[in-house]
Structure formats: C-alpha cells, structure tokens
Length: 357
Ligand SMILES: Cc1ncc(COP(=O)(O)O)c(C=O)c1O
Image (cartoon, rainbow, N blue to C red):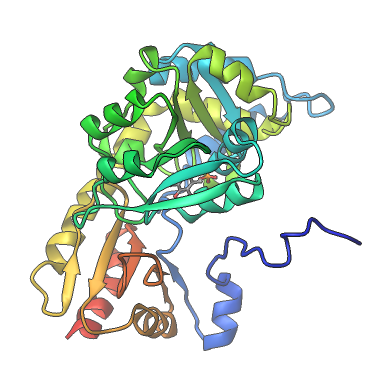
C-alpha cells in the first residue's frame, strides 16, 4: 500500500505506557497516574443517570441531541448556539480548525512550548509549524509572534492555561494578536481551573476561535466530547469539514447530564484547585527544585542539575507516572504532573522531595 509521502518521517503523538504494561515492566502492584491532566473523580451519579436513560436512547438512529447540547452550552458559555460546534474531543476540534483553514504549506505560528498535538495536527493537515518561544516567565511573546508573521502565515495558536507551563495568556497580548487580522486559536481546554476566558472577545473578533473540552473539569475524558466557540459565520465554515456524526449518542447524553450538574463541576474544580495550591506549597523552597505557578490542574516542576528522563524513570519504578517534558524547548529538567487526590499526591510529593535532595 502507498501512504502519503510524508508519513514515514512523521512523529505521531505518544503516550506513557498503559497501567498494565507498566505493572508488567516494573513488577508493580499499583500504578498511580499523574500524566494525563485528567480529574481524579469519576462522576458516578452521572453514570447512574446515564444508565437510567439508556433504554430511551434510540441507538438505531444517528444521534440527534447535538442541538440540545449546543443550547445548553450556549447557556454555560454565553456564546450564541450558532457559534458552537460539538466535536469528538478537543483533538478533533484542532483537526477541524486546521482542515478548514490551511492550504498546503500555510504556516501556523505556535507559542511554544505548548500542547504538542497543535503542531502534530498542523502537519497532518499539510501545514507548517513555526514555533515562537515564550518569554522566560512563559508568557506568550506577542512581539516575537507578530515579527514572525509572513506571507504564508494563516493562524496563531495559543493555549490558555497553557499545557505544560500552566499559565494563562495575557489579555493585552491576545488583543494585539487579534488586531493582526490573522486567525487566532485559543485552546482553553483547562479554562475552568483559571476562570479566565477570551470568549467575550468573540463578538468583536471574527478571527478568534476557542477550543474547549469535557475531558478536564467535567471529568469526562473517556466520553470524548469537546466544542469550538466561534463567530456563527466562522462556525458554519468550520462545520463543513467535520464528520457530521462524530459524537456518539451516549457521549452526548453524558454531556447533557454534566451540563445539568454544572454546580458539581464547580465543586470538583474547587477541590482540585485547593489541592493544587497545597502541592505547590509543599514543594516550594525545596533545594534543587523549581515549582512554577499554576492556573490549571497540573504543575510544572524543574529539577536543577538532574535530567527529567532520570527523574521520570525513577518515579516510574515506584509506580508513579508523570509526564517528562524535558525535551520541549525551554523545559530542560522539567516534568509535569496532574493534581489528584491528596492521598495519591502525597506519594508523589514524598518521592519528588527525595529525588530533589
Ligand atoms: C491543551 C489541550 N488541548 C486539548 C486537549 C485535548 O483534549 P480532548 O481531546 O480530550 O478533549 C488536551 C488534552 O490533554 C490538552 O492538554
């Protein structure tokens, strides 16, 4: 079979190994995951509710709850429902954006380091990535981004809060970039943890697209539901390239249930934010370790004088899975971990303290 010619050299997204693979490789009885920036809570009540609704779902038909979920999302976000597109997780949202915007060879400026799938999805859609490094404190460097704009530049990609640096974008920077007239994507997958959004700018800037997901604050990573927020005219163009039925009837129902319980989501977020601040406090002041501030549900740490790979592997041996981000620009010696439940986090904090000293 002949695949597209650039596929052989293409580097796909990589995960850490599964619990089972790790347990076998390291002879572990328990594996604790801090690598996926998901929530430590399973919304059992919502699953029970889904169970009670299952028999009324017409699984023989294509899902028709899209409109209902968009109406609910309109209430949640304050964005016109015609400007909301439901997608099969935020990752499909990225694909839709690049597919709709990029002609072959068009450039996407990426405020780097950031979520690697932004670059991967650009390349898969035949675009080219131009990485512009952040400032030393990880704020987007709007000056450098604007300077990097050239003829073939189509889009500027920001992430706020940014994965893995955990800081949000500055409103003044976002406004300056929007004023350039280029399309600006703000990936707000972790918005709820920061409470800071740029969605109010959609009414003034047709060139803004915002990506959101149910995978983080809404505790539904397994359900694969995300959404895009845009000007209704932009949303119409974006939806042309999206597979029409990419979100399942079950996932839509779960999204509905979650949106009926936004108060619970807020409680989950509050709990995680409190626990995040506790973890940061515990790790601050430890020699050999730099803890960065976080406006999200994960924390970035730098081990001074130690390789992140070494730290990552040592933690793995103890059944503690974190993300090694040390090979990303600006992040030498860094690991990222998601905030979990206090008792699990304590295992990781103790191991980190030991490795740092
Ligand atoms: C910044 C960012 N955007 C988007 C996603 C994709 O989320 P999902 O496809 O689960 O909605 C992630 C997942 O980790 C992320 O970190």
